[in-house]
Amino acid sequence: MIDVTDQTFQTAVIEESMKRPVVVDLWAEWCGPCKTLGPIIEKVCAETNGKVLLAKIDVDSNPESSAAFRVQSIPAVYAMKDGQIVDGFMGAQGEPAVREFVDRLISGEGEVEGEAEVTVESMIERGDEAALLEVLQVDPGHPVAIPKLARLYVESGRTQEALDLLARIPETDETRQIAALARTGANEDAEIEGRLEALLPSVKDDEEARKEFVDLLEVMGAENPKTPVWRKKLTNQLF
Image (cartoon, rainbow, N blue to C red; front, side, top):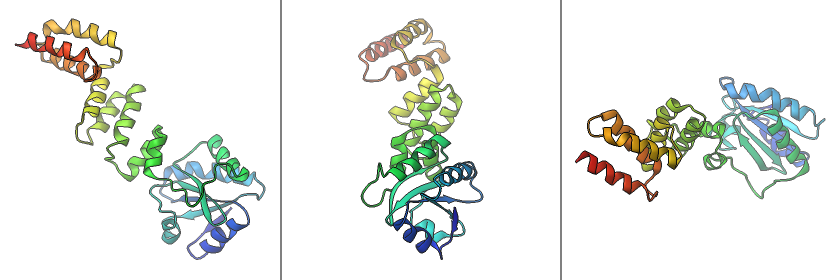
């Protein structure tokens, strides 16, 4: 393992990658996830017995080096061979994932031509909670990442977190449905219709019943052929 500076970047990273694979770990002292990832990646790279060089770059002290990787969020880790980025990931990963990353680098599997950017789009495509949280560090109001993460929160029962997250962005058909799902906890048609039937007699005089009824229709979705039937029942009951 070596600590790389702007002055040593060319020889320690670019030129060294012509001889053997180099793993570049971009970190900063204030970054909590970096402190979690650091010991793991150091351990895994050390176990290669010199087949892979770990180069650590403090992004605060070495802005030119970090700019070369177009860093969007840290921790960010890149694999380099022959002066080119061939793989990478963003965010703290567990030891199995880091080991797989390094093994893939040694074996040469998964290399790409040219530069492999770890972009916001790739993190959204990955779609797990850690990746989506990384995106929100870059763009706290990202209109795609927020609904995706909110759905994950609803699925794991963290409904208030989901609602708080959705409040960051303007309302859409998608966000209304996710928010309604968070409030009602209903996602099966049979359950929804049973609750709609029970609520229907109360919707005219009971505001909470009316709100729940509307939420259940949102969860059912506009594309569901049963939705217009229940909307008509609601209208008839109200007027």
